[in-house]
Image 1: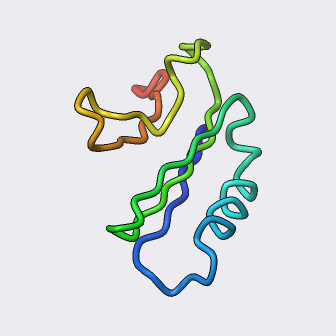
Image 2 (image 1 turned 90 degrees about the vertical axis):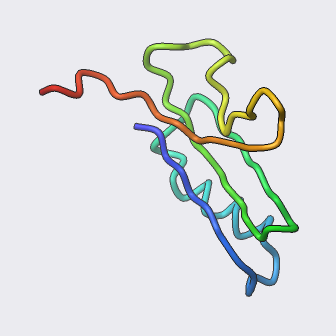
Length: 83
């Protein structure tokens, strides 16, 4: 299953290092790919670990940018969610 970690706000001595450590801590949730996104102005950092199930291509890389490139979304696939 994919994993997402993030931080909002200040108070971290080194946000990049904290994000890298958090992403490494959930590496077992998604060994197939990973991605990072930060907005220093907003104080928001996201990291995503991907477990490729249906889309094995690089098109599933996350976090994803919007068509305008100004927002991000981290998504996961729901497989057989009705069970």
